[in-house]
Image 1 (cartoon, rainbow, N blue to C red):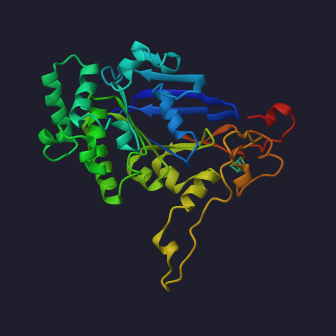
Image 2 (cartoon, rainbow, N blue to C red):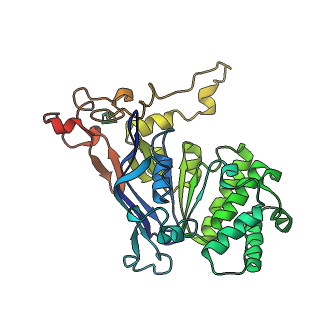
Image 3 (cartoon, protein in one colour):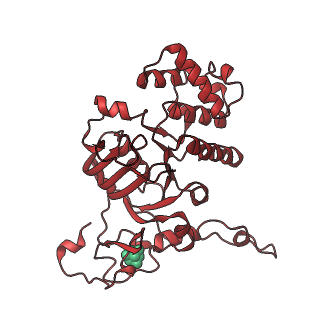
Amino acid sequence: MSENVLAEIKNLRTYFHLAEGVVRAVDGVDLVIKSGRTLGVVGESGCGKSITALSLMQLVPPPGRIEEGEITYYRNVRATPSSNVADAINISKLKPNSRQMRSIRGNQISMVFQEPMAAMLPVRTVGSQIIEAITLHQNVSQEEARTRAIDMLARVRLPNPDRIIDNYPFQLSGGMRQRAVIAMALSCNPNLLIADEPTTALDVTTEARILDLMRDLQQEYDMAIMFITHNLGVIAEMADEVAVMYMGKVVEQTDVQSIFFDAKHPYTQALLKSIPQLDDVMSRTGERKRLQTIKGMVPDPYTVLPGCPFHPRCPEYIPDTCNRVVPEVIEVEPGHIVRCHLYASDIPVAQASEDMTL
Ligand code: SF4
């Protein structure tokens, strides 16, 4: 599989201007998505994972909007692996309903949401919705689109696809519905599939099957996947690279092995410690143990904390620095970046007032 850059997000800021204040849902995010690879994006609810994905699709719901930053999408990277510069498109500058954006969304970049019922209209058959997705982006007849839809339903391993195509979403089980949604998302052979918690609503057996299916389809189509989840177990199974987000920022990013065996940021370390282990939950004597949690709560979304946004919860907090100086991005090893003062060559000291703003 190639490792060409398919999409690049630089200093993305997506804010929601509400009567109560400004929610900085995404606040200076940098990410790189490579063709044929899986980027896992992990973090607690409200950290900005989904809004980053919606920004990439130009689907940020009002009153949210992209305030700043660039989202560069390399349209024909798979077709022209050696030169992807000529076809660079800055998605952040496109209007959500522009022709160019509509030709990218659902065609070259597709999305699978957590709740399959929200992705499909309950009053229309599964097939009619997949056929519509195909005919909207590809120049094919209804008949050909139906054949392709049946083929896609078979590829996501739904039994009797020529019967299921005429079923309504409510006639399918949760796992079957999610397979149908994946079939719809892949029906135009996208370069990038964004999967936003696609298995959270499913039981563990169905989840394992859907994850297997997604991996197989990725191999088959050589597509990139941006996999959003709060579940580090799923990240371990799916991701090649991992970005850990906290309060709208990427606080650590590296390959999946380094995240699990050499995490640097105290927030990543705390997330890893909070994964339940069988030995931790119950000892050999039968004594029950408490699960480890991250102390404190994520601050309310209107709060702009000075310094490092994780400082009220951080076990490694450096007084008078972490609560005053915004940590810079530091490359601790090639390809491993972290936003934390612990890795600065000199621990910065707060002096100027501009240091105290995010
Ligand atoms: Fe903790 Fe300070 Fe690092 Fe933030 S910058 S994660 S508060 S040590």
